[in-house]
Length: 222
Image (cartoon, rainbow, N blue to C red; front, side):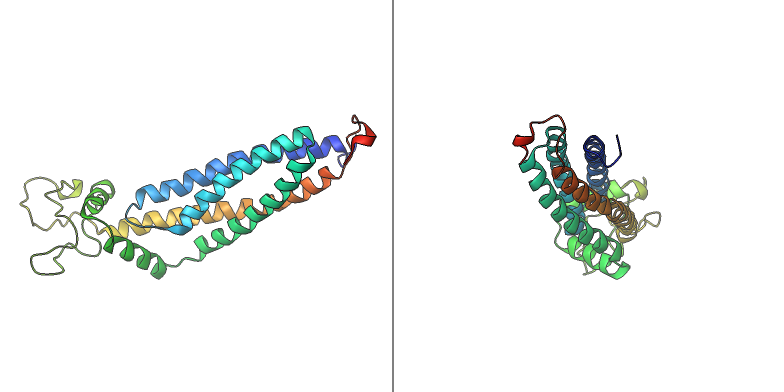
């Protein structure tokens, strides 16, 4: 049977939706990795990538059922929603790749300023850093971060008193920036690459939906 036939279109659509399921897990995993490590930031862009991954997984299930059963209604909604997911994923992926160093620093600074001391402490211990831009006091007698010796940040080591400077520690902005850059670049690149395959899915669904199942009753078509 020619590759443009009913069976070929059905098999191609099934395989494409299985691929979408794997892609959705990749998107969710990569974006979640960035959110976990950059715990003091509230990055809506990365959250958008996670949302796209979740939507893509569920729409892939709908497409898979629609392809197997040649269900006209499911295939119709599949086409519409998949195209909307493409638009959303394409826009968010471009935003991830376009976010420059200054914009990332503004996000981290704003997130740090509105973060509780407990979250800052958790961030310093997990990322192994001390202070956002500096370990020095911003205001006499008041730090903008929990004391790194008191909270047992690993890079501070042993034998220091509370309030001591820890030259072995890097600043948290450097650590968080590295994580953010990797997460944004990988999430944006993967999202952008696979967003174009979703257009293929829309086209294939339109074609398959308008084909007649040779095993079906002709009068039952549409």
